[in-house]
Every structure is written in structure tokens, then in C-alpha cells.
Length: 317
Image (cartoon, rainbow, N blue to C red):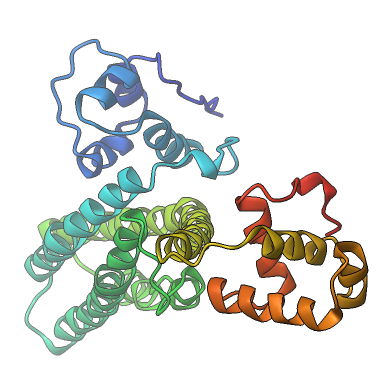
């Protein structure tokens, strides 16, 4: 049994390829060109502006499968997005047409042969529809997140529900060729070669789907969470900034009322504490709400913390 190896940044790229020629396609999808001499994985990745950690995570997963201890929080979404886009281009633009041309050359013109081509075309159509959906809906959504946008008309859970591998037609195609297409001589060699390519195609597509499930979707979830947190923080800061710029600055007494409120005092307790009437407290509260456009205790607490009116350690959450 072959011993699995986890490759690292200082390993030679040439050694990685010699040991695992099946990752050659991954190089193309990352935009890495051949002719890298004796450079390390890290040197080759940096030369081609590819995140080394993301490259190794996918390559080691492709080679070994299973859990290699990757931290999905360290995955570079731009690098992964580039990889997935290039993989789509390869699969739709080269792999699917190449297999169909090979099948057409290996099969005859009788009705059974044409039905086999029809099954393949149905499979290719299903895969194309799925990948085009990702290109139209998922990839632009992720690009908007990377730009700092916070689109609310889509999320990764929608993608997860839609994401599935259209493999039933492919299994049917393999089964029919194996069971019902006896052939001799050159015809048999062509069919065997095409069947081998179909099996390789199935393995490639399975790995592609697993990379999306294992790395892409968790990375999107992290990005969604960070973007939405940043958006909330920006909105709060902007709200406070706008209120200050509009000249609606609070009086010292109004600030004292806010501090008392966020410390949990009632209107009567505030009145007693500040030696003013409860009606005056209510007037101050109306003025505060009007100036800040903040009405909830939680909102006033955020305002007080951000503007250093209170120490967060003194607030009872």
C-alpha cells in the first residue's frame, strides 16, 4: 500500500508532480505554468500569485483525501475562486467536448450507439446547467463579499441546497457500455479507452464537488459572517458620525442621563441622582432620542461605549 505524504511549502514542486501526476490539472486551474525548475512549492506559488496554503490544502486533499488538518479559516477565497473558475472552463470547454468526440469516434451509427450518445448529452447538459448556475449566482455573490459588499439576496445555504453531483446518468452510461456493447479489435480498444476516460472524468468531478463542499462553502460562511459584522459596525459608526456632524451634540446633562440609563437606573432614580424632576428626565430622554435617533437601551449603551461615556467593564450585559 502506498504511503500517503502531506506536502509542505518547502518541498520541491517537481517532486510533488513526479509523485502525483494526477495533480497536473490542478496546476492549470491555479494558473501555474510548467517549467518551474527546482523551485519549492512556495516559490512557484508566489511567482504565480497563488496563496500557498490554499494550493497545498487542495493538492494534499486531492492526493490523500480525508482530513489533512486544514484550517478553512486560512483559505484564500480569491485563490479558491480563481481555481474553481478555471476548473469550470477546463471541464466545460475541454473535458466534456473531448469525451463526446471520443465516444462519437468509438461508436457506430446504429440506434443503440446513438442512444448512448444521447445519454451522454443529457449528462453533459445537467453538469453544464449546474456549473453555469454557480457562475451566474454563486461566484458574483462571493466577488461582492470580497469587495466588502453585504448582498442580502443570497447566501451560502442556498448554494448548499442547490449543490449536488449529477452522476446518475454517468453511472448509467458506464453500465450500458460494459454490459451491452460487445466489440472486437480496434473498435474495442477505442471503447475501452473512452470508458477509461469516463471513469477519470467521474473521479475528477467527484473531487471538484468535494473541494467545493470542504473548502469553498466553509470559506464563504466565514466571509459572510465577517462582512456582516463589519457592515453592522460601519453602520453604527456612521450613525454616530452623522449625528455629530449635524451639530446635534449632547449637553453635559444629556450625557449624564445616558450614563444613568445604561447603568440600569429608572427615571425616578435618575431624577434623584441628578437632583432634577422626573418630568425633566423625560424631556432629556426625548431630546436624546431626537438628536441621536436611538431609542433602545441597547443602542444607547453602544453609543455610550463608542463615545467613551462609560467603560464597557461597568456595563451589566
